[in-house]
Length: 459
Image (cartoon, rainbow, N blue to C red; front, side, top):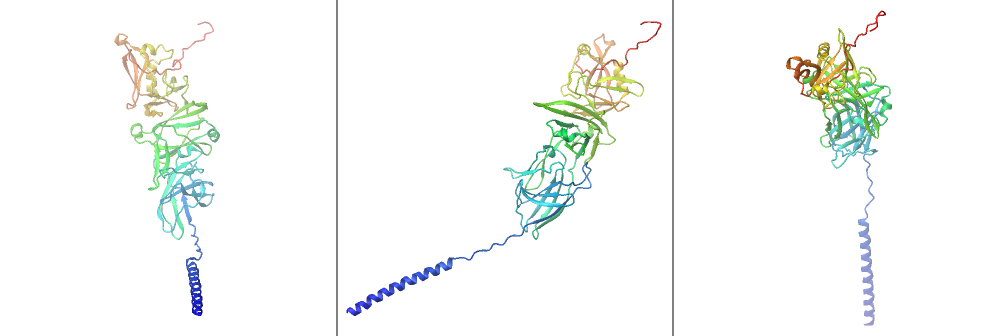
């Protein structure tokens, strides 16, 4: 019994060790099964871009080709803002740079991806930074804000990422209706580097601003200002370059008559208009989409100063002088004023101004060539009269006093001049002296008094 008991105990100890060893082997085997070999990731090939941009030979422009440093911004459907591509021109070829806002970074295109791509070029906005907001649109930011008030070129293409490549050639065009005006001034760049502001106004033109690119459609969202509002310039080739869009319906009412105004605003704590000069042009044909027009230089005498109360223009017909006429109506800030001052006859002739008489008005009306025109950002209609030398005067729609009473109405009436841009020329009629009318004065009498000299006689 003792021997059998000892053997039995040894057997149990052996079985216990065997069982523990079995468990240990199983655990080791399990651990070996769960260890995974290290994964080696494939590096995706980068997307390359073989894109170019043609300047658009069909458009007229002051700037007619690419220059070193130009940047074309390209936006893709399916790529979130502010990611985009920049095509940078070095003077001979294009380099494509992927951007995420203002830093370089992969825009996330992959093989098989396709959609519409939109290219935009700002002639004066090569430093543009692309931004976005909660809307997801692509926005533009530049230290040169007038870059977005100028014209721009744009083009679209369908893209497909094929074999890690996007290819295509954009045909860049200026949007329909855009026109440009260039005014020579060798100091333009230096002037625009100050806090002073320079503007061009024409009721036939409205400023337009490129605002954003809509991500889903790749459409350009533009903001059109009202016709006649001031246009900001950019400096280009020794002058000011202004751009805007043709205003609808202008030529229907005013044909090819255009009245331009340029101003300078100086910073003196706040902005003050210190220069204002006007130019009237009767063109041989209406301004057309994509026209690039050279106006007289900034200092040209063809621009008439109109800001000061004593500014005048001396007019003449083929037969005689028509006198020195004030540029603006008495009491008004400038020609084509939205709130013109009017006076009854008694007040008009006692203002201390030389109010033209009926004959002086008749000479002016008959001695000038008249055309309908619209003036300033308030779109004031009237008639422009041009003399034999191209000098001009603007009379806004309304009634103007002469200094001549009408003798047939017991001194209750006086002669007045009626201006209506829908009529070919001003005309004269008699009105009641108590009525209110405008006053356009002469600097002095049309014909100065003659003093005879006779050595035998003293006058």
